[in-house]
Image (tube, rainbow, N blue to C red; front, side, top):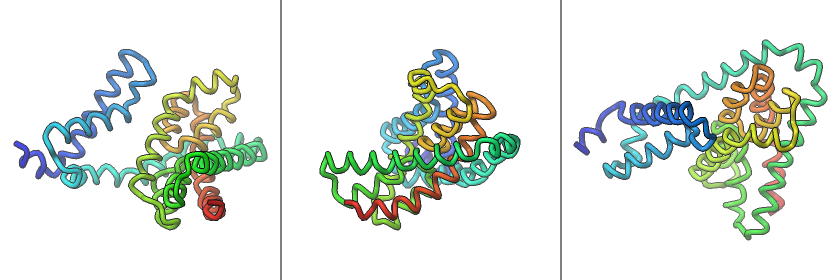
Amino acid sequence: MKEFIGNSLFFGVGISLLGYEIGLLLKKKWKLAIFNPLLISILFVMGILSVFNISYESYEEGAKYLSYLLTPATVCLAIPLYEQLDLLKQHKKAIMIGIISGVLTSLISVLILCFLFQFTHEQYVTLLPKSITTAIGMGVSEELGGIVTITVAVIIITGVLGNMIAETVCKVFKITHPVAKGIAIGTSAHAVGTAKALEMGEIEGAMSSLSIAVSGLLTVIGASIFTNFM
């Protein structure tokens, strides 16, 4: 049984999608942020691999096909942005200031926390790209000498947490403008957060989509500067 599962070409895709569907059902039934489909899917896959003692390499052999969809899915986020192009032009100054503020907040918070917990330089640069999309974050981490696998994990955790608490944070801090919501979510929680922004509204989704690309580019520049601070 173990050999059959481990050698199955689409085993990784199958359990990943099954876990995500279970997450969707739980979220629909109880409507709690903790039942985030991506989080449930991660935990489900971890459980299956542990129970059947299947190596990550065997899982990855099939799951890698899902990764191929990441790039076109990200590109598709440009559609809502194009539909809100007039709004983008209208608030361009506020949008740019918001994205720059978000990027600086992310980099500075990592720097301060790493100083407080006395992290090594390698651990520090591993965490710097935590708030940008995986495709860019992996490259930044590798270039700066970080641990890429941990960077990926941190990016996923950041996105999932952002998705879970986005609405609550907006309510607590009384952030009501859709442009402000979208910029805040996209800058801090990349594509996973953008999924929540799209649920909140078209404008939020469009602004969040823009933030993914711009904050990613700014983080590449900012991380190369901040790496010298520790």
